[in-house]
Image (cartoon, rainbow, N blue to C red):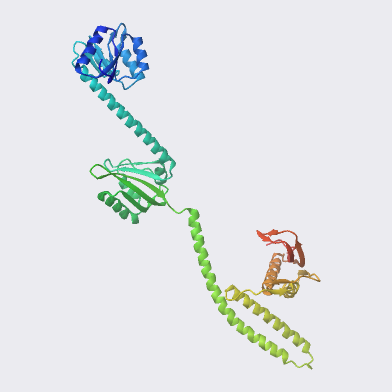
Length: 455
């Protein structure tokens, strides 16, 4: 025997015929080793025990045919070649053997083809193994690609320029619709926004013609639901051995602003417009306030002069002084309102002073009593002693008047009652009112209630 190279399993019940074949292989210079199986049971054991490069099989072994051996081989080791070597084999049987998986068949009286047949069978087996490995790797890559495409939300596409076919993933069809099997370019152009169509098409054609490695474009595309999607399309260009672009593989992201984002943008724009309006109103109010303040200055000055010019011996000097006092108080209140307008227009700061809340409430109530209808009762409860507060009298005045006015509007036409109470309270721990945290400590509380039906 030669040194081991090609491993043979030889099913042959005639030792003489087997030795004739081995001698032929020795003389051909073919490096091989052989395991002889003189009967089917030995053949089956050896086949399952070891791996062989080629199997030689006689056709008729006392009821066990080569066809059974081939079927067993194809079950145990599908790619191992089987050569039928028989003393007599009809054409019909030879064809049947090839149909069920034999690689070749030879007659024992004409073995000059045996060595070439063995070499060719091994080459075919190796080629089958390479193809199977490549197919398995391709299937694994396709499966990895399928899982990757399923995991991404991007619309992925593969355009073959040699067949003009477009392959897409599920995300593509869900977002942009299903392209036709043929002429996808026209489908794509028809749905690209007219203002973007020529620019995007020309840029892709130029990238293909120049042999660029990458291409990218932003454009609008018509969704199946009739809305325009804003797309970011990025692709790699694949070339053949001659450097020609043959495939374009890309991914598309839908960057269309969401409804929430669009609403937020519109809200910000509206907020900006309102801010600009308020700035304009503040500028106008500031100008008016300055002019009004000048008029009040004249009224206040003349009021003081008029009161000082009264004759103390006049019969109604007390009544005249009272009228002048009311004029001066109202004028001072008007000047405070002017300061509020200037504060609104951001031309002055709010001035806070130490004041008595009961005095402000009492002044407000005198104004309200003269304004309310006769059928509305105003009940005011002020404490004899009340802590002073730090605040702005005009702002506090406005708040109290607004609360009382709202209470009046909530009363029925037949009349009702408004209660105004001032008291001091103490919080031993922080309190929360209308989502605002109030620290612990002493406070002055002003309450306005009514018995109306509500706003």
